[in-house]
Image (cartoon, rainbow, N blue to C red):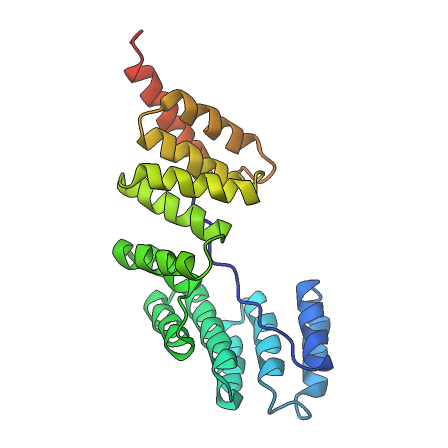
Length: 239
């Protein structure tokens, strides 16, 4: 199973923005907004401040207010790194609101301003159905940093869904599992690659393991397991 794009986490700049980020990370969202209101005049020109407040609004599903904060941060952003982070956050908010095309455009702006591939862009292209674009972006991410476990897993899953490059997919997901052996989504991907290779016994073993893991409650895990069990019953010599 591919893992979803993680919400962006901009680095805090200065103590008050750092405090807002700490409170947001601790899910003390009301307190974070209170601090934001108290400091909004003093830090009105701070991109990090507006990014922090915007992330709190986004966590509260107050997407329009989050977008307002992110747009304010963008107007104050002076360097390419900060602009990249803000464009990604804008994309996150647009994606949360269901506007996938706008989110993809924002992630592309993040890529353009930084010159770096973007995980959120790859994942969103996959959601849009642009699998070729998704694969290109994941491969670019691996070229930049070959050891990213979630990228390795997601590319492996994308290949398995297409039924192509299955040996390469197997290599990728095994690398991902070296970093996160207890990630049920990675184990599910391993099982699904085995399934696509026709290795049904191994597929069933891994897919059962995925469903029994602590975070293994995804409906996709059980759908994959059912497909594998059905295939093994149909294709074993006994049947």
